[in-house]
Structures are given as C-alpha cells and as structure tokens.
Amino acid sequence: MLFLVCCVALTADVLVPEIWGNGKTKDYPLWFWAGQQVLSGGNLYPHIPFEYIYPPLPAVLLAVPAWFGKIPLYVCLSLLNAAAWWMVAQFSNAMTGSGKIPGPWLFALPGFVTVTFVFDMFDLGQPNLMLLAIMLYGFWLLQHARPWMAGSLFALATALGLQHAPDLVCPQGAAADDVAPQGRYAVVHATPYYRYKRWTDDGWRRLVRELAARGLSVVATQGPDPAERAYLDALWSGDPSVIRTRGALEWSTLAALLKGAAVYVGPDTSVTHLAAASGCPTVAIYGPTSPRLIGPWPVGGLAEPWNPAGTIQHHGNVWVVQNPQPCLPCEKLGCEGHLDSYSRCLDELSARTVLSAVDQALGR
Image 1: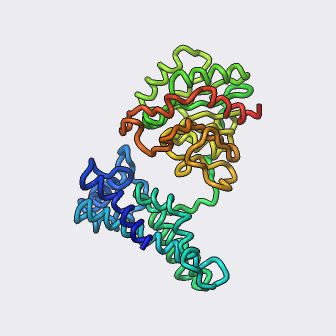
Image 2: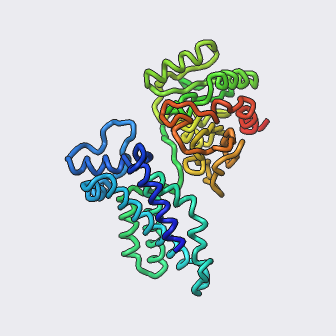
Image 3: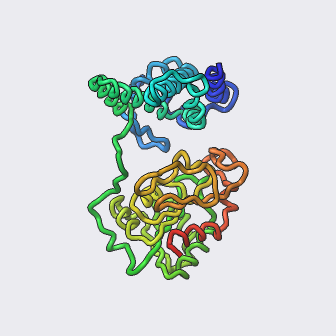
C-alpha cells in the first residue's frame, strides 16, 4: 500500500504541472519531441540547445506512446519507473542475504533507501532507474547461471543508452605548450552554459587577484560563442595579466592544459567535469543544481556520493563549493525559473569561501 501511495504521488509530480500548470519541464518535453521526430521522419540529432544524446532505439520506443500525446507518454514513463522501482527492490533482496524470506520492513528497506533517487528519476524523466532494473536482472541471471539471457539484457541496456565506462578517460594526444604559461598556473572558466549557474563578476575578479598573489599565472578558458566572448571581454578587460584562450582550444588540448594546472576553478559546466577527470585539483562552484546528481567525478571515483548541499565538500581531487541557504539545492532554473535567471545562492557566495577551497586544493 505504501508503495502504491508513493507511486501515485510521484506520478502526480509529473502529471499535475502538465495538466494544470505551465507544462512539465526537465527531460519530459525532450522525450515527446524524440517520439514525434520518429513519427514525422525528422532528424533526431539536429543542433539544438536541448540535444538528444541517446541512441535511436529509445526514440523508436517513445514514438508509440508519443503518438497518443504528451499525457499518455508521461503516464507510460511513470508506470515504467514504478515497475522498475519494484524490480530494483525485488532483485536487491534476491541477491543479498542468506536466502531467507525477509520480514516486511526489511523487504521494504531498498525502497526506503532509494526513495530520493527514485524521486529524481520521476521528476527529471531520466531512464536511470529503468536501466538499473535491467542491469540488476542481468546480474541475477548471471547468479543463476543463465549468461545468454543476461548478455541479452546488457545488450538491451547498451542499446537504450547505457555506456560502458569503467573509468573516466580524458581526450589524449595533444600538448598545451602553446597556451600553458611557464611555471605554476591556475585555470579559471567563468562562464557556464546558462546564466543561472554563473557566479558574480566581482567574485571572479577577486579570485584572479588572489591567485596572482599566490604566485600563480592565470589562464581563462572559454567557448567560441560570441555572447560568451563579449561577456568575458568585459569581465577581464581591466586585468591584462589574465591569459585568454578565446575559445581556440581543441578538447584534447584543453584536457592537457587542465592536467598541468596547479588548480582549476569553474562553475557547474562541462569544463569543470573535464578538469576533475584530468586529475587537476578542481574547485567546482555549484548553485541551484545538486552535486549529488551531477557533481564532478574525481579520479578514482567516489567512495560515497556528494551531499546535496554543504559549504565545502572534498572527494579526491575535487572540492565542491556552495552557499548552503535553506532552499539549496532547489533544482530550479534560478530564482526566476528561467535559463537567464539570477541565482541568489551564487550571487551571495563569497569569494572568501571559494578561496578557502582553493587554498585547500593548493595544499596551503
């Protein structure tokens, strides 16, 4: 009964905004778009802001419920998540313990432990819970000496988008000699893809001054976008000591530059994840987004996940910095609810807090 109540509540979180609100956000509109693209014979991989990054098979499967409209599609996805949640609990119990039948509370334990993760999968519309159920079923089949069926399930998970990634591997084969300064240097990346993840201009300027005071040259990276370039031109115009890459680096060259840095500081964006994977001491500035969901992955992995909120968290070569206000992490598009919104948690994040993490990363 408790399971059914939770499933109804989680499904309502998906359907209520679509029926009576302004429409469900996160990945749900993307799934409907992908299904409609299949039905209309459109291109699944155009250059759009919210890019479809999965193989074709999920889009083909989504096309069936998408033909009936958004609501049937969202109901179908919610039912699949509910079934996957049930399967995860079943297989977790089946593959652990002594083989005895557990009591009702012990039987429900996997569900309680994973309830926050399950909520995120319902709310975000991501397929991780379904993929987890498929993988657990495959491991259960291996445990029962049925490798062919297990292999079929693993192949299905791959076809649905699960990548084989035992470790993070940065792009190789390039050197950063042309852009890396002599001596010790820091790399900063001030511009996330969306405004609501951006720290303050004053914070970045003070950070650069303090890095220079610590004897570090400062390299500022950026992408090729003209709007990003204009913003950074204004941000760094008063500091000629900042070395600008101006969006000219290939991904492998950027990885080499980051690997050689004494420290990297950046927001919740792709370059920060690349810095963490390169092994560079990485200071990641997070705002509305929970690092538990998409925090940087340090070299050697995470022994335990990032906490959703904290002032300074440290795992391996990564330090996550936040301004732990009561609403953090809200998982919203900033305080105004759109991509160009401000975020109070970032606007009020002090340079002193960020510098404290930087000094830890530098071993000071």
